[in-house]
Amino acid sequence: MHVKLKAIALALCLLPAISLAQDKFKVTVSHQLSDARPSETITIPWAQVNQYLPGALIQKIAIKDQHGKVLPHQVTNIAPQAKDPQGVGIAYGELIFQHHFAAGEKQASFTIEKIDTVAPVFETKTFARQIPERLDDFAWETDKIAHRTYGPALAAPAPAGVTKEVLVTSGIDIWFKRVPYPIVDRWYNKGHDHYHKDEGEGLDMYNVGRSRGCGGTGIWDGKQLHTSINYSHWKILANGPIRTIFELSYQSWDAAGVAVTETKRFTIDAGHYLDKIESTFQFNAPASNANLVAAVGLNKTPSDKGQQAKIQVDKDQSSSSLSQWIEQSSNGAIGTAIILPDANGYSEDNLNHLILKPVVSGQKMTYYAGAIWDRWGDVKSQAAWLDYLNKMAARYRDPVKVSLSSINNQKP
Image (cartoon, rainbow, N blue to C red; front, side, top):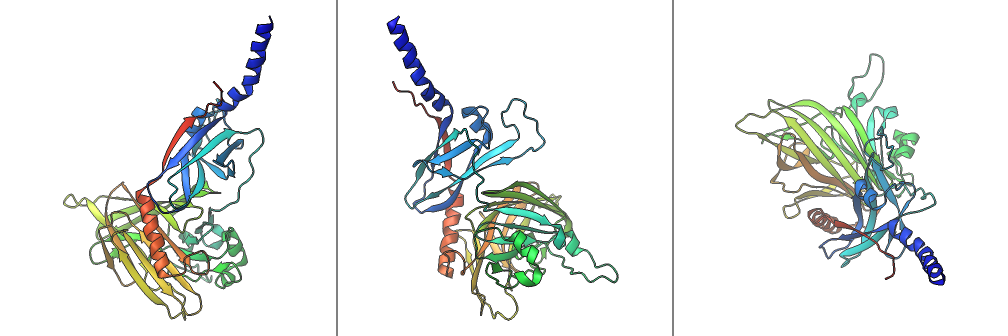
């Protein structure tokens, strides 16, 4: 009997360890580059999380680095109306968190575990929304940079007797921040005449007009650029705090006799100056040429009036990039850029510098577009901007690899 009691006591002592082993798992993330990878976004399908942590609740999990520090996380919801009677997270898409890889750090480990308390609300670093109160603008931002583009209300003619701004364009605007917190709602609240001045948080000093702005697209026929007008529909798929995903759709337009429609999916990540954009064009091209040539553009005249801008343009085939460095008389210097993997050429029209790539109907074209301001962040020169673009292009070519494994805390 004495031996049996000791065995039972030993088994009871082991229960917490066995339970703990079932309530956490290990994540190993690796890559091949020697350079630092700040704000690297790591994604894990929720279905895989559920395999290791059955019944896990998104508000009762923690992600810890190898030092035990709790990291901010996000879970995307791909099916908000889905029912989940078995508690398996059927509506969830991905678990998202970030890690700053130091130079030479090619592997990092994390644990994901269930917790008894509710996880904290993490700082919002990405955000997007449609702005019906400002003529259907659609605006988005990271902690580094902000953008907007224009909707149907801005394109509509002014009714008789009504004074209304009218602008027909699918170009992409830039709002230059110099604070890390969200400013989109704050700037729209204070109004047009205020956000065109730097009142402490940055300003809207970028010119779009009918150009492509910073990363707008079109179809290039070899001589002329054919473009859509203002977006027609929008959809937000995820909205921070680490990653925001949304789609903008454009009605059919004529590209030298070919009817084309486009949907753009934007993925914007905290800590990044460049957004990932996946453009899918739909068209019926002649059988003799099933492909069209897409163009992504940067406005040739991006500065406010009176800034006496000095613009340097760089076309780097090794990184498949097109970039500008713009020195302004009083508003500082700004950089704009596009990285279009496997681009096959460059061109220009009266309004835009262009980078080109053939596209197939229904197949997405992935590119990256964004900007910096030398009064916010650590990029202060054209050389530093080009270096950033080269390093980001290398990161896009070498995505991180993620592996999952069980943790066994039982002692032999």
